Image (cartoon, rainbow, N blue to C red; front, side, top):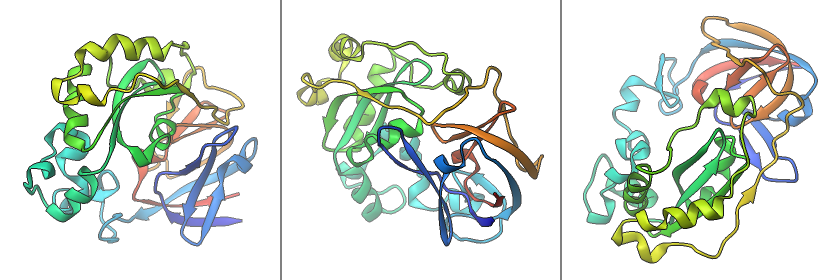
Length: 263
């Protein structure tokens, strides 16, 4: 069968083993059911996730003009400490910014390639951890807005990483860490404005990814340079598809590409 649609990050379900679903317009593909099966993925065209025009993708699934215009691509998305909705100050669209920024946010520790600090909306736990390929994670603080989460992350990343090494994560070259100990060690660095929101009574969450075989030397598939690729799926971790020949394909970084999948 052949499925065609514009790539968006896979939806996930945290079960005993994480379930992945790829939205292909009129069909949802349960990617777990494709494990140990060969399929072909082919590039068809571009389609901006915002304007839906056939324009080259610039970043985050958007064409260049949309990326610099729409509120969901503002700088505060990647740098939450730049959030200003709590001050009633607009960046691009104050109504949208209030709807996202003025809700509970979590500052967390996740272990994917190493222990790192991150920020997400409370409603995105544990989805955010799954998307990052973390096999364990823990909340540090729960704050009422994105700004407080952002300044907490900025303070903590002076003492812990804030990036994931994607190759190390995909090779599963990771150690188990005591995240409760990490949380308690980092408490002293939380900014004064966020100290009252520290969480001191939780335990870490463990996540299991559907992987049959991890790659020893993962090599990334560029679907623009290689518009047709056929391979046997042997794992899914984070937002990556892992193939038997050690090729890996990041769905998230290829949002906005229309592809066909032949199973």
